[in-house]
Every structure is written in C-alpha cells, then in structure tokens.
Image 1: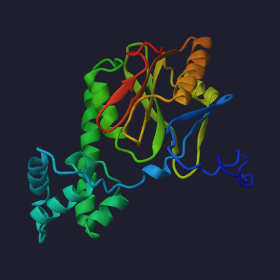
Image 2: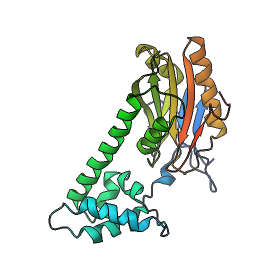
Image 3: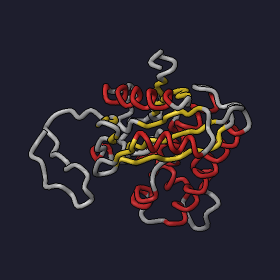
Image 4: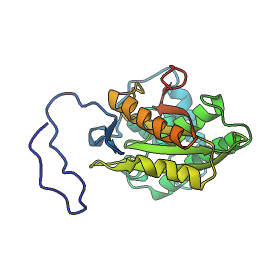
Length: 255
C-alpha cells in the first residue's frame, strides 16, 4: 500500500493510496466491521465489446423499444447504445449518467430505458415473492444478477427470510464507491432480528466480473455466520454475482 492520508473527520480509518499492479476486489473484514473495497477502477461503462452472434438481435429489440419515441432515429440510437455498452443487458443496467453520455444527452431515451430496467427488476422480484426463497434457485439467481450483477460499485445486500421461506426484506447494507464503507457485523444481526427473520442470505457483486470470493470475502462470511449462530439465526448462503455468473458459498460447501 502507499502512504496513508490524514484521518478523516468522521473518525473512520484513513484510506491508503493504492499500490501499482492488480487490485483484489472484495470485502475487507476488520474486527466487528466489514469494509467494501474501493472499486473506482471498475467505473468505465464503455465496454468496447467485440460483436457477438446475438448483437443483431440486441439491436433489433432495442430498436423496437425506442421506435415509439417521436422524432428519434431508433435504429441509429440502438446501434449507438449497443456499440457503447456491448449488449442489451449492459444498456438496461447502465446508470443514468452513463446513458446520458452514450445517448448524446437524449433524456427521453434515458427515462424510457430506466423505466424498462425498473420494470424488469420488479417483475423478477414478484416472481421471487411468489415462491419459497431457496438458495441458488433460478428465481433468486435471476433476480440478484439483474438487480446487482451489473452495478459498477461493489455493494453488500441482505435478504431476510421468515420461517415460511418468504422474502420479507431486501436491504442494501453498504455500497463501496470511491472510498471504503463499512457495515458493523452486529448491525446485520440487529436488522435480521428486528425484521423477525429466521434466516438470511448475504449478497454482493464483483464489478470485475469474476464472482470467485477473495479471502476477505471468506473471512467476512465466517464472522457473520458465527454471530448469527450465536442468536439462532441461519445464514443460508452468501451469493456473489456478476453480469454473467455467480458463486454460492452454500453450493461450494463453504457454509
């Protein structure tokens, strides 16, 4: 690590300048707290992906979606957006700031795509709500990959489940932006108990695209698992998602 900067006014530990070379993205445990790694290096939404066999279909579907906007050359805009984000999924999960830049400041396009993305996430949430929440079920994985897998900042979420395996809450605990944010392990347990949950699923994303857990991810999971067990809460799983894949601690027998 590089030189430490002065302590911040909020009392949190100072950040450290990043050392040259590869940076491991993951959760950093520290006593009773868990830090989210700085993911600022994953903030370029211009994917520059090479053409794929499904590109024409992506452009055609996006063209159909945009064709209702009066005065817009939907075909040209569809091509422009796919060029920029690499896929239809990339377009629909891009943040508004990136869409504004990619569309040349067309706020009508941005608003429409944002509404479609929200509707897509909500439809997957409704499907999840209609059935028992089981670790690594198709409904759960689809929901998590779409709602979190494309985020450019690493976030930690907590799914709280009742005794009938119904999802009662989906809470974002913290989001790592250009600095590290932390969650106190005791706060995770408190939220679960206050909600009347009997089990919980930890979720976080790896903006790097590789869902393989780091050692810090494993250590953090162990700390929360121990704390949950002490109050008879069940940590059902810890799922790490990316745009194209996921990793389940339960499936890999790490829980």
